[in-house]
Length: 304
Ligand SMILES: [Fe+2]
Ligand SMILES: [Fe+2]
Image 1 (cartoon, helix red, strand yellow):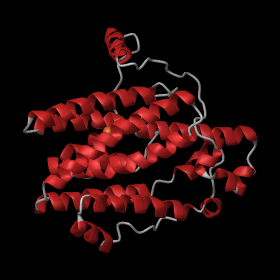
Image 2: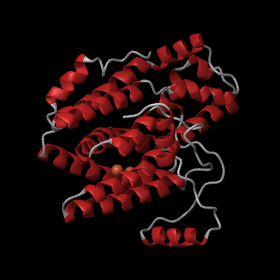
Image 3: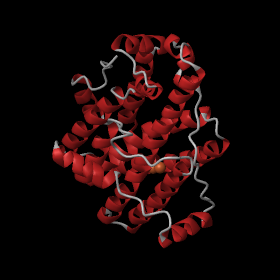
Image 4: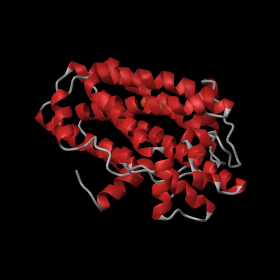
């Protein structure tokens, strides 16, 4: 798997696919297709807050408490923006993933499964876009999982992808989306998240069935090891909360960052994240791979 310039190209090709201009005639046809599926276009034009301070445990932070109300608002808007952006990129990559899986399927049922999967990911993307007052790009709304995701889809073999995308990422994603749903303050988005979760459980369930049906060969096992290690590291090093303080115009110093992590008990949050990722290996009995990752220190919390 390549690194460097090729990574950047893969990232842009898969995740920064441009949008047509809003007056392009194809837009009306896409809108009509969504409307036929009960998804109306109701794109938000102004910044808003979909998750409050409690979602991020910010009520426990002395640094957050000291901010002026408009600065606190700016932090929460930025956190909403980052959460919506990550979902946008994941759903966008789902189009590419489903296309690759349709092409490499050897039975009709598998092709049908992934054709429906593509339909659902496109619907999820539209649901998230309905809440967005901005169009993200992988620079302004970067998350460390994005390069790993783009490269996995570009270079991963079919059996590798079934595990890393449908078992590991979608399994982890279900817990993430369900947390977002529980704490969402926007009624429309909350309803969308409930419907997205029902689809994602099926995607994950199909991944479990396919992964259990076939033991990975040596090459697949090596790819799964390498990609899982990158995905796990990317979730361990994803620190949005301190980065969101930049929106106040006063980025945190390294001392303040440490204080924030201590107030939020962020080490425990990361530990829970690692435990959820671990579970995915148990679900498909990938004991050897799990032990290989464990002895490599893949699940260790080191960043806070
Ligand atoms: Fe999705
Ligand atoms: Fe999905």
